[in-house]
Length: 236
Image (cartoon, rainbow, N blue to C red; front, side):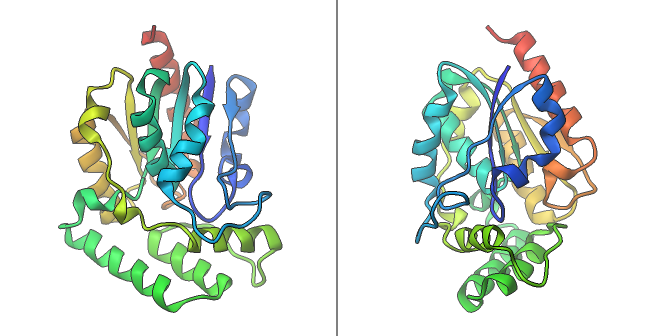
């Protein structure tokens, strides 16, 4: 079973998907480092549309697609570009804030994120403020190692997810199974996942215990594998 994993902000694929190491014994996990993240060169600007185009060929003739956070946003775009190559789609807390921008909790979160992006330009401080706002429980050293600093600078260079236009009607009509996962730690992410669950006709899982760092939540690997196994059994 071939599974393409698209990581979120703040770290590269190796770090982001480390909790799935056990699954690599049973599944073919393809976990690319998004452009701008180490070990590749840093980019001045990172665009979810461009990265969706870059990553879509990894689906080949058919793969399961998994994305977390900003990578979940990209995964939704990839799935819309190549629905016939997607065997299933699982996303955890994608920042598709435009879907619920009238929600007061989403409004507050966006204001906080915008303030940090506008006023904080030093990577270590940005990382601490950003992770606290989105609810990540990742621990930061006092001095960021080079790869970690580059990952934070890449996060700082990402296009605002608020600008994403998601083709939800097309995704909802696609035949592949869908799973939306939230962590029950922030009402803004809950609101977005509620919309995705409803409009995509998706399964929903709630996995608390790791904040926004959903792949590290207790039971994540097991829930994901169960979804992928069921999707493969029901697939063509």
